[in-house]
Amino acid sequence: MAYIYDDQNIFAKILRGEIPNRTVLETEHSLAFHDINPQAPVHVLVLPKGSYVCYDHFALEASDAEILDFTRAVGQVCKMLGVQADAAGDGCRLIANAGAHGVQEVPHLHVHVLGGRILGRMLPPAE
Ligand code: 5GP
Image (cartoon, rainbow, N blue to C red; front, side):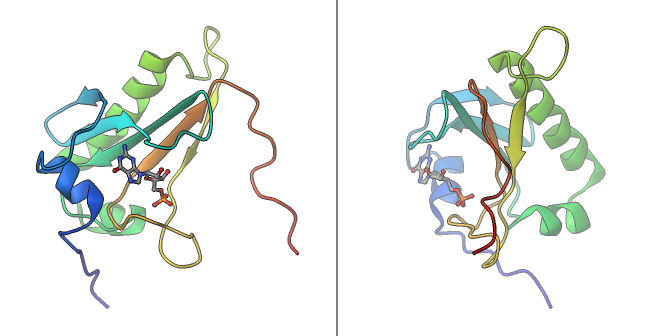
C-alpha cells in the first residue's frame, strides 16, 4: 500500500513559509524548529523537507542525500542544544511517532528531540 501525504498538514504549511516557526537549523533537505507546546526544557522537531508521512516512509523511499542530510541534522541539533550524549552533554530522547498506534498528530515525519531534564521511562506501564 502506498503512503498518502496530505499537503495541507501544519508542517507542510510551515515548510512552505505559510506559518511562522522558531527555526533552530535549516539545511538543504531538513528543517528544525522549537515545538509550540514543549514537553521538556528542550523540545525541538527535526523534519525532512520532502513529503514523507512518517519515519518508515522516509527510510524506504527518501534519496540517499535526504537521508544523510536528515540524519546529520538530527545530530547537529542535539549538539547545538547541548543534549548530545557525549562527555559534554546530558543526553536526550529522540521520538518519531508514526500512524495510529504511534499516536502521530501531524502526518509529516518529524523527530522530537527532548532533553534538559531526566525524562523518565520510555513508556508508561501497559494498562
Ligand atoms: P506528533 O504527535 O505528531 O508526534 O507531534 C506533533 C507535535 O507538533 C506536537 O508536539 C505539537 O506540540 C507540535 N505542533 C503542532 N502544531 C505545531 C505548530 O504549529 N508549530 C510548532 N512549532 N509545533 C507544532
